[in-house]
Image 1: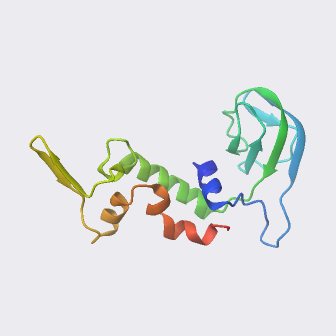
Image 2 (image 1 turned 90 degrees about the horizontal axis):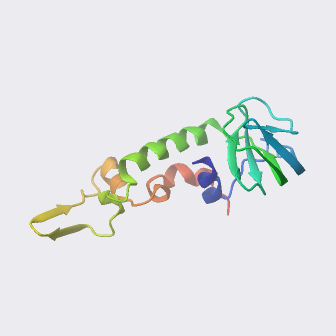
Image 3 (image 1 turned 90 degrees about the vertical axis):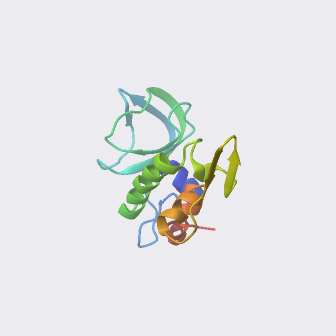
Amino acid sequence: MLTEICQYLKNWFNRKPDGSGYPKYEGTFTIENGALTGVELTEGQYFRIMGSLFNDGVHRYGDGGLTDEEFDGDVWSMGVPPEIVQLAEDIEAWQEKYGGIDSAAMSPYQSESFGGYSYSKAGSGSASASAANSGTWQTAFSARLAPWRKI
């Protein structure tokens, strides 16, 4: 989910608060036993892999779970704020509830009726109704995403 959020925000959180950048590594990297080697990262730190056949995206150092390979590419250290990590968890929960293909939130229709069955989406009078009707996580969480978005 963090990969999708960073792509949407156009923000890879590769700048420190003082404006300097986190380290970026370029070259040949090895992932062995699910762990990336050859970079200096802190346990729990997020990083981005680019150029990998199996592991492109955002990962958390020390969590393992990477597919073993050797690749030529880039690894960017990241400083993902706790607010974004929490936002990712909230978006995942929202998607579980409203993001399924059978969810009324995914329907382009406000209401429909057929074969003795009908439904209407709730009005926009409540926050949960608005979230359920928004259709995408980007729309449902736009207010919380906006401060982090880069143009």
